[in-house]
Length: 209
Image (cartoon, rainbow, N blue to C red):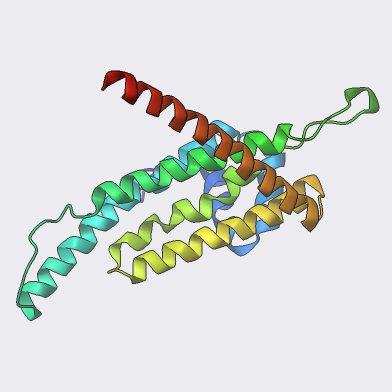
C-alpha cells in the first residue's frame, strides 16, 4: 500500500487511506463520511487500497506455510515441503468477490428510478466497495493454520455485509426493508446474468463438440 520507512513522509492521500482503513473497524459511520467528503478518496484510490491489501494474502500464506514446514520438521512425522500450497486460492478469492460486490454497487445506484425534475439524485457510489475493505483486510489471516484462517476470513465477510447495511443506512437513509429488497433484487439480477453466460457457454461447447 505504502512504502513507509523511518525517514519517509506520508502524503495527504496516504494519510487519508490509513485513516479510512482505521475507521472502517473503529468507527464505520465515520469511515463512510470520510470517504464521501474527502475529495482525494475517489474510486481509484479506494481500489488501490483494496489491491494493496490483497498483496498481503499470498505473502501471508507463504509465511504460514513456511512456519508449518518448520513446525512439522520439529514435531511432526510427515512434512509437506510445498511453501506455495493454497497461494492461488488466496490470490483469486479477493478480486473475484470484489467484482461481485462492485456489480451490487452498480445495481444499488441505478435500481431505483430517480426523477431529476424533482431534485432527486443518484445515491453515492462505492458504498459496498468501501464496506468490503474489511474483507480485503482479512488477507493477513492466511498466515494462520486452517481452519482458523478460514473462520476469521468468514467472520470478516459477515462483518463486511454488516458494514454494507450500516453504509446504506448512513449514506442513502434507507430502512432495513428496502435494504433487504435491494439485496434480493441484486441477487436476482446477477443470477440472471450468470445464467445467460452459462447458457452461451453451453451452446459454444456443444457447437465445438
